[in-house]
Length: 384
Image (cartoon, rainbow, N blue to C red):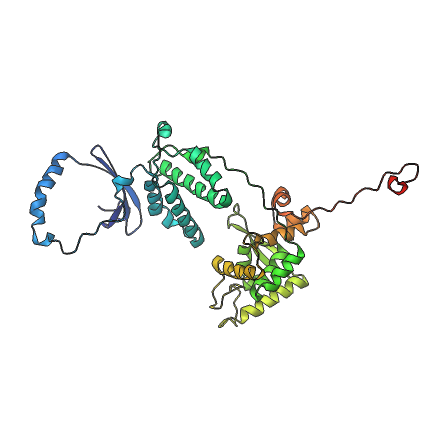
């Protein structure tokens, strides 16, 4: 079948649904990747004619079986029709390949794997009226899933959020359902992390870290920058009197905001040490402004996985549990060690000071007690 966009004859079927002699297919062009739906019909008479010709066709020389028959490992469309497996496969075929960010693509693929294990065999309601039918996936089950996975609440919330995205696509793009069970979800509230890293713990972790990780910890403790912001620093971001860090901001056109941090003596020393380590990488002595400040031995920029290995190695040397001290806690330490809420908000580039106070100001407040009440010029404690 020719593509209506580029007229290419090469296409493949993404999805097929059959109901009462009516066949609905979603096709995808191999040349321009355009997708279009087709509506087809078949009759029992033509089906009977095809069956009557099968013995004759099988006897033809070109139809002789040359290779052994292999049992397919993927269930046919009719076996998954109406189940969550159908929606997940459609998402993997139509939407997941269009996600360009490697980290996001990997995270979504992992979430789909978990969703398939837990809900793949469950049926979904095609209409709101079917939502109360036995065996149909409904909001109470998704709420219970969040409760049962409270020990990994962040990951469970992302999985249910992705499931809601799949249902929205099935409703507005694929035409498979009008009911979205995720719309009735109430995510359980989780108190923000309250772990404060004191100076003694920070020094102990700093001593066990390697040279590259020490520079990252120095920059994070002085600027409050996140891990991704530090890994994104380029050589050209280091100016004579300031350091440019791109702070993630989803509401801006570029997705980030450039913030300039004054080069204090401590911050300058950390950056000079990082530059010296960067020049020690083979083939990196002539650095360009666009080169990443932190690179591996192969000269490639540090990825999230590279950083996790550095952090785990350092944490194992000290003998701390995985969640007792995270790199993001250094951002909270920088905010907690600031002189005021306003200073912490400015350091972390928060639009709302309430987020700074609620999530990042973790240091215990020292309160000065009042003096004892005096009676006739004497304190009750001293008189006792």
